[in-house]
Length: 483
Image (cartoon, rainbow, N blue to C red; front, side, top):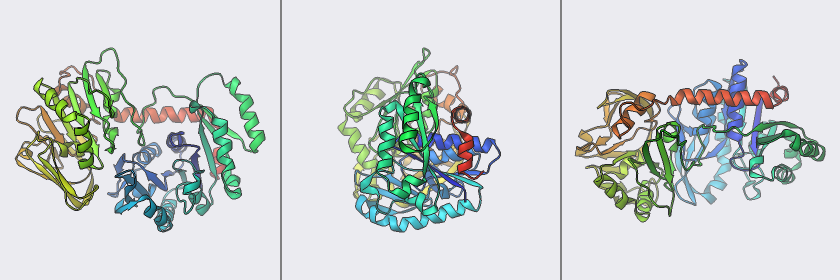
């Protein structure tokens, strides 16, 4: 099966965007292409067409390829629950919870899921563009590797190595990575891509010539830094949005230690009238019109972090002065009277008082709810769509005032005065009419601008593909894919 693997010298070297761009280029040329990431560690995930769960960046790559995201595209997803342990998702379904050492040994078994998923995709598509994770040169993780060269050797596919020149030291990145690979791994590394270049390419060309002469491998292209590129991030959080001169609504979000699906807020980053700020540990909590409590992979632990950082008092003060609070998924659970996790599904077993802003309690139960849904905001009657990924089941009187309706059933809650709202729905702001209605409710006013986030994603993917067409040796890439 023609498969090309894009690996990187570091995390965030640009692997995800290069794969997304290649998927869009190939799809535009009429090639049946699927993305593939053997192993991913991320708290940003998406629900697939087969009811599974994969990393958000892989789902974006499927969008670039013009195909539905499927659990086979990311057969191993690790969702960190602490600094030493994670929930393990195999082919879209929860397999269990493991600490780092146990998982390192388990990778021998996980290889079977990776290979089975790759073979299943091979039967349905003409070409696979695979993405590595982190760096292939992590010496301590080489044994039983399935994320980088271990996969490439298993399926015998060529590799292209991406380095990020914007970080500095790109030649050391590329040459050093090659030096730490085995002989067979160096042989299957066919060349390089230099990513995020700013400036005059004439100043870089002597270095590129040296790199080819020193390693015997070509540079397939130098990709320019794409200013303002905003696509679904794997994990890293930009601390703010694009603040324009017309920004009048201030939105503040705590950057929880185990924040999940923060892509929920990308439409707000784009909005010309929204001043969006993520507030990390030890930072002052600024005044705002709207505080959003985001999703969390470890609700009780992140609730304790909120309290330790002074958010509980800040939220109470915010409400006294007429501000609004919105909770999404784990953030919604925090708004209730209590959160119970008697089976330790998200960390140590136990319970915690919630913020007590809405009258309900949440129990964590086995059997994660995974579904793509459509519905409407009840007060405004406008359409909404998105997805649910949660273990919690909430019960209490304030749920009789639901925020929205999903597939004909009530979801979420709102306080009697409308200041506090919550929902389990991810993607709440994705539809322009829903985004406009929610922001109007929070003080932006009826004349607020509408932002079409889905159209923006498609336009950014085309922009990315245009960049690859202009700056990458696509003929060489197609030869590696046997096209």
